Amino acid sequence: MVDTVREIERKYEATAGTRELPPLPDLTGVDGVTAVIDQGTALLDAVYYDTAARRLAADGITLRRRTGGDDAGWHLKLPVAAGVRDEIRAPLGEGVPRRLAALVRSRTRDAELAPVVRIRSERDVHQLLGADGEPVVEVSVDRVTAERPETGATARWAEVEAELSPGADPAVLDAVDAALTGAGLRRSAAASKLARALAETDERKAEGGKKGRKTKEGKSSKGSKGSKGSGKGGKKKPSTDKKSADKKSAGKKSADKKKPAGDKPPEPAARPAGDLVLDYVRAQITAVVELDPAVRRDQPDAVHQMRVASRRLRSTFRSYRAVLDRTVTDPVSAELRWLAGELGVDRDREVLTERIHAGLVELARPLVLGPVRGRLRTWSAARRTGSRRRITAVLDGRRYLALLDALDAVLTDPPLRTAAARPAEPVLRKAVDRQYRRFAGALQETFDLPPGPDRDTAIHETRKAAKRTRYAAEVARPVLGREAKTVTSLMREVQELLGDYQDGVLARAALREIAVQAQAAGEPSFTYGVLYAREEARAAELRDRLPRLSHKHL
Image (tube, one colour):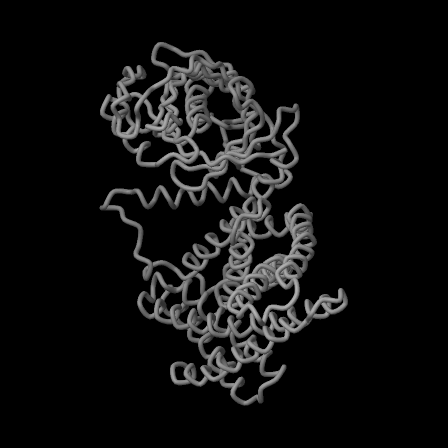
């Protein structure tokens, strides 16, 4: 059994220069709060799990096994937005629950999940009630002790948490926030207890070493400068964790952006083409990895967004072959195509079901004969059950994990060609122009074909050419600015029109399939014929709009 809770909370600590928390203010008079109930003290004992390279912590994810309190069990927290996380809970057990391990597999891959920190908290809980007597915010004062099992390093601190109760008005949390900060607290620098525990116990390790003793100066009596994380001779061992290496690289770029004004990073136009292409590739790979748990949890639009990210990667590898060596990226593109195809089974079902249902709602009641809505639900559910199982199997399979590793390799060891070192503007402009010309040629071909299956196929190919042009322009936007934005907008318009047409092609095929099933069950098939005819009329209307595109693009 796995439960999910949306957690909206804010964390506070003592102001700079002190580790002592000020007394909590009287929160009874805060807007939206009519009473404060002391819930007593709870003793919480949590062991946090991660890989040796801390892949979960790097992405702001926490996985723990906690006893004590009223929610003992396994908790996986996935970030949603600043101060907002989804907490996915599973019953207590000795090993990491399989469902939770699956939700972090895109990060962990084959790496083992093992204890990294034990955190014990003595928690004083205060329940804030609203005018109706229902809880609105829970405020807790935690006295925390963290310990690293592999080093014995410890850290202690106190903090305050304010968590919005389910269904409560977020404005109450804002009012509580104002009261707490007004009483001398400040927002915590660390996003979570785990983040602070890792940072402070790392500092302890750096100061004293695993076996070292502190001198009066506070320096370790064992090991020389630079010995942290070192092997023999004080030389740092190279990382064998590809994701860790990429995180370090990304962290370095982030740090560069925070340099003083006198040491600003170069403007996009001054950067080499390879940098901008890799920036875009990195963003899409991150999207694939981050969307994995959302797809597994069947979150709205997650399948579509992962499919779009994989499509953007394929398109970028194809459009920027002058920058990235296709002997490396072509095999990766083939695997991305496979992934998009597997994801498309579920996405196509979602789109078709919504489209057919919308058409059904528009029909006058006399045109709806038989159990049409029930038949549509049965058809959709049958496809959904099979597609969900298939997607889960794909994400759990070796082929998918190998694809994620291959994508990491593109970043850690980029297959750059000579053009990658050239100024970005001319290289990226040339790629966008080339894709635009191909789109225009595909559009022209649609006018040379009579209505029918061949023209439907040509329209679909034109839509794909428009997508490639749009994605190429997205890569180039940092240097081409408004020009790239204009191309992106135009191609989005084309995609919507031609996408609507393609969805109609699929809807007509689905309606015929449902009609055959209904007829076999002895149900009227008249309504499906009406919907089919409406789809044909809509397709004709869209075809009539095609010449307008030629005035813009040919």
